[in-house]
Image (cartoon, rainbow, N blue to C red; front, side, top):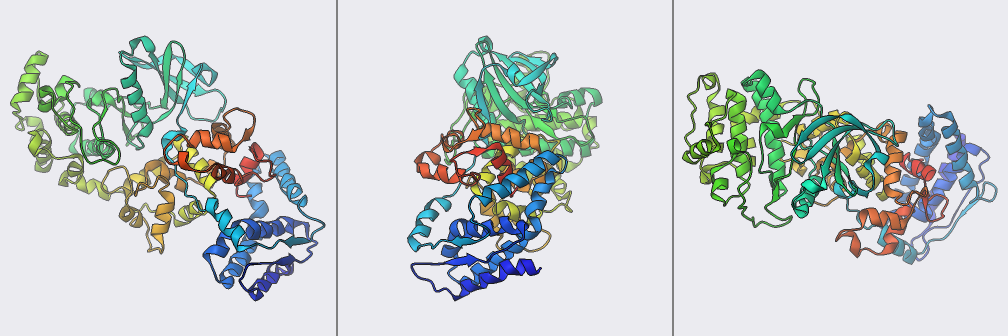
Length: 592
């Protein structure tokens, strides 16, 4: 502790300095303990770099002194403990420690460090880029590659499924052996009648971010085919469950249906109508009890409302599967409530085992749909609650009387399900740690979150859905605030820091990025995969230009000065060569 005081106590001299054109001139005393070398350098980094923001934010020197003292004590306790996490790889751990010390020795003459004077103008100029907000969208990390998918994945010979637009295979990542298995949908180009519409389907999948919607990871294109690399789901279709078991118990039907409606509500909130909802288009993640249900196949989906607009565009094409199609779709003038009708038909089938409108031909079925006579007197429905039958009637009805997706989720039949898992709550320390990360590290964490599988973050996914009381797939500030067992101060500040796309709510990927365990995202396969995402030319270095190419093709970043990208690189460019190599990347992510 005496050695610690040798470093900490001299900081008190800062209290004697008056503010003016020159903010600080301070010399750290000689310290002969080699373990303190990195700590001394951190003082330099804080005052000449990071602390410039503190000088501007806190015009009171006692606060600054307190920050420095607390920082030093933390560094003393944690500096090499952070590197020691690589204990399963002793060689890498030792190399990182030696590289860390040697890099900083270059900046010193002996163990004496003179901190340079900082002017007010320097601080304000630097903060122009330090204070630039980051803006992150999950879809930016879903890459489109040209070339052979076989260079990246080993595809099984056995098909998982096949349809009119292609076949699906299980695939094992080739470069990163510990990465989760994927599903690869192979779509021959000759089967794509309208490429623009197909690309719209892919773009819709890129933009969707919900635990009950199939996840797209990346795409490939070669001369013959387009490949969609997606989340691997092995639990089978909801349709198979109905065929095997007939109707479900009311309790089981509730558990299935709330997941269907959460997915629909989220899509509608994003201005997307699915238009082909049926049991065949819902698949279980795995075959375990209580497995998550996911909606698939957005081939017929359409954008009915552009982002940021209120006005809806009516849809006209008669599309969908005849058993589930709504009367207004048959008439050729409809909106997103066509999905509510289809979902109501699915609910009817879940509770009875048969569709509400049936016939020997499509023509007979269409005739029944237009007549709209719903039979609720089936023997199978006699054991079903009045609340469940009331919901069916309010979904399979005239368009003017039909509930929207949020109203369905608020119906009393589904309300009691939203009270489950009340013991789950947010970890404030994890959220606080995320908000304190550098801009580049937040970007990398968002990229890692975009690529994880449900097996890896199952508990976080469950927590997100528990907090999402209204089921719209996004956390409002009120839902976020209610996620803490104890009252916390300044929660709005943390909420806004996690909302990295400034949408006013926390999306699924934003939530996972903020809540991921440190031990998880520091796994070597996760870090290497993330590094490769930004190292576009595969030269082992990340540059400002590469960061701009990954993030910059959008209205927000296209307006930003190139110096912003250079400032991002500085978050991990410890040897100051203008690039980030892999070891620097590991060091940055490890908070070394």
